[in-house]
Image 1 (spheres, rainbow, N blue to C red):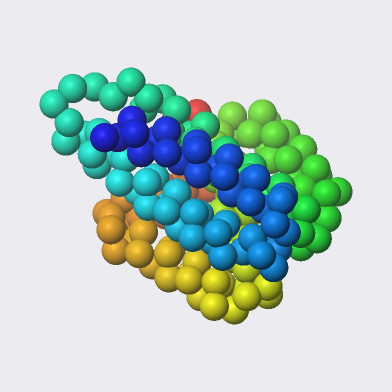
Image 2 (cartoon, rainbow, N blue to C red):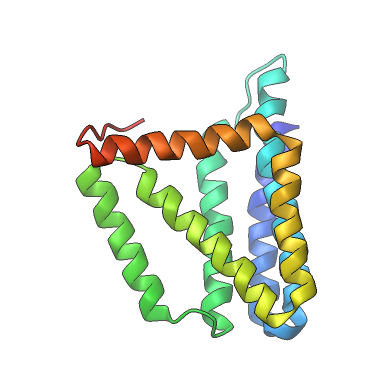
Length: 172
C-alpha cells in the first residue's frame, strides 16, 4: 500500500501539471488544489503504512523524488498562471542548489519546498478564496492525520537550521 501511495503521488503530480497548463488558473485551481491535498495525504500516510508492513517497500527511496515532483508541478503552475515570475523561480532553484552544496545539507531544499507550497496556497487564495481555504484546511488535515510526523518535521528542520547557523552542517 505504501508503494501504491508513493506511485499515486507521482501520478497526481503529472495530472496537476497537465490540468494546470491546459485549463489555466481559473478552471484548473479546483482540480489542482484537490489533487494537491490528496498528494499531501498520500505523503503523510505512506511512511506509517510502510513501517507497519510486514515486508520492505520497494519504492521507499522514491519518497523525496515524489515530493519533488509535486513541488515542481506546483511551481510550473505558479509560473504559468503568472503568480510567480520565472526569473524568481530560476533564482530560487540556483540559490537552493548552491546552499545545499555549500552547507552539505537538505534544509535549504526543505525551506524552498515549504515556500512553494505556501505560495501555492496564497496563489489559490487569490484565484479562488474557497480553494485557498481548502488548501489551508488540507494542511490542517495532514497535521491531524499524523501530528507526530508533522511536529517531527518542524523540529527536525529547526534543529538542522540551528546546526547550520552554528557551523555544524552535516548531511542527514
